[in-house]
Length: 323
Image (cartoon, rainbow, N blue to C red; front, side, top):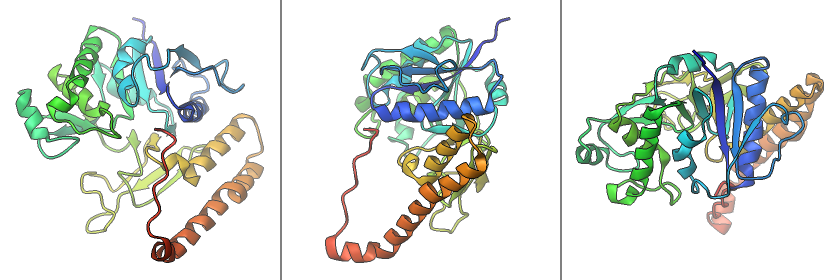
């Protein structure tokens, strides 16, 4: 039986998504130099691939706004996949190892995610109320940085339902994210209505610094990564995240974390490694030009922040390049 596999990412809208997708692609090919897994980039922008990726990445061209804005394009993945099995990965991720075992864990799921279940409480809305309205016992709860799809009618049905639910997003009682419908809750409800299940989250496939605010370390070249969620009663403890220390294959730099020096340092090192540069020299340049200036700036900010607030008040948050 044919069993084609692809990793697919979206880079529509703002140019920053193409920049991040390039970094994700480089991390993929670093860890999959001879793999039969394809890497596919869905974009509404002109081909901006650098030379090291032009003959490797499969481009799927779409028109600007063809599948909506913000998070809505993620509700159309069933229309974009071309392989038997596809792993969607958000463009603001980096890979720290091979994904073959991830594909095997998902095998047999028409549509799936990494997560658990939620039956009450708040998750972009009153979940107990939503479950009662749709007569379901619970819905999957997950981070939408990864979706898995197997090509076929079952996947098409799930996504068709998610798109129908999006039209009633506010009516259902879901809370918007950045003033837009959140794909996660829509996909969660659609999956539950079609009896599609998540695979258990054990922290080994994907994690992020919001779930683990106690610090992290990454080395994309060696594949080493860890994130730390301090145990209670530490003030940074995330009660909703059940793990203390994780080492995921997929590191999700959601929010503003792509602006932090670890991401910038590792994407620079990755590019230099792929293009054959000396890693000793590369590491030294990354330390001097990326890491040390950022550390000095952050330290100065932390020391002077109380004085700044006293004199000038709290500074306005800068608009995100993603919006």
